[in-house]
Length: 199
Image (cartoon, rainbow, N blue to C red; front, side):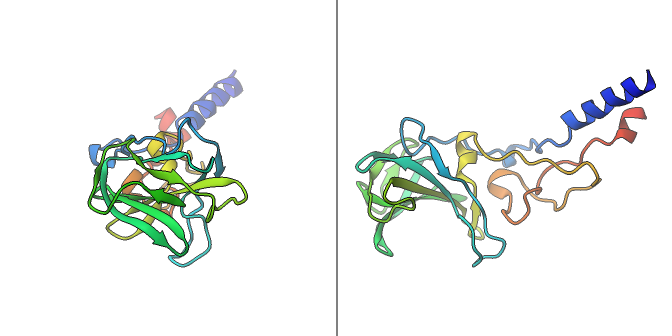
């Protein structure tokens, strides 16, 4: 009987290993998919370990040439033109900005855009998954140019849990726009240990 109770308590502890802090300023804004209908994610976010290190600083969404690209969040266009041989649109949202490429822009610098508003059309040249057409969608925190996972904006970011053998988070920090990509555990609460279940 004692073994059954211990197993149930362990299962309960695993179910509540870690929860994000719920402070209002840590909320991730709810955004819109830049391609419609909801596209296939061809390559997920893989942040670099160092500012100039290897990684994938956004996500690649499968689309078709000429498909309308939409702003993920409301903001102001700060770039719309060619960059390194491909069309790029950047929309500033205050604390963060989103990037879209390769795109033939239908907006100009200074234009205000609503969440979900058209900003251009998807190009094939410059696609990250050529010969298929993919939109490379990025999300960056403005204060320190840290890349964030844009899938968080549409509720599909990764689930991160603390290992059971640690009694403290790896690093303290904020969730969502305030969370650095260098530590996947930033902003998460410590796990409930078995000792806490018995006291």
